[in-house]
Image (cartoon, rainbow, N blue to C red; front, top):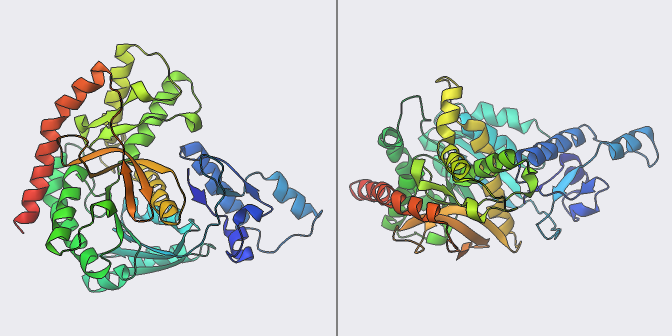
Length: 398
């Protein structure tokens, strides 16, 4: 689940009360495109309501009829007092993922300061976002000379920087370009916000997370509990495809996805999906491969003019929100994410992880696998370990 604040309610009430006390409050459980869109639409509707309408007035009645206004619920309906106090930086904020991600983060009531960094164009992005009436302040930083200021005091740093995939590009091609970018940005994090959680989006995640770990080790500030590879998009896709294929409501579906974040290293555990549905081997294989090739599907559909920017921004916002809710004291926040792990022979691996105030609280095991999943797990290991080693060797050679 995620927590989203209605700009109108949050601004009018000054963030001092539980937003559940807002007259616009309702509980839903997002983590699905439909619910996320509804929540965003609700906040947009509230943005038009600058003054508190009189009870019983036409405007008041219209607001009540408009539906959900604020989303803030855990899976157990535990309502928190969302408190805007965290500083978050987006490194690569002027890019395709970065701009959409920044907009979603600007609407999160747990974020008080949003720092947008890129080599160019971030002042314009920040100016645009600053006109949205949420309580989060936003500032743009452009060029390497402003990177330190963007990072100072950050609680969470999200890194979508780098070049996107293009038709015919492999993640190995991406590595040659993005490895150096990630290393430089991680070094800046080590120097300016060493205790911040880092959410790595830059591909290839299987390699960029190990690169970041080695850079942080060199600086003497590595904390494996605070470095995450964002694999949430794989989970989002698996849930969507599973629900669509089986005629289920997406909001009520859960599909754990383990392994890495590239091709065959992405393994949706459909045998553990809920609600459970009996599927043929052919359907299981098709859903697994579609989840693995989701990025390629989008690149092809955009005919060389982009990659999966919108869905990645959505997934990145979900995971960032989970990190902040856990940091804010919410219990039982569990997400699939790529972290340093001992679950398998690979030193980094994605499984379900319970998040806490200081990052990783508990790394969950794989659970019982089907024969198909065990075979896929065994098959991915050489590629995953090779990608990890490639990242480690790159960082050590710097």
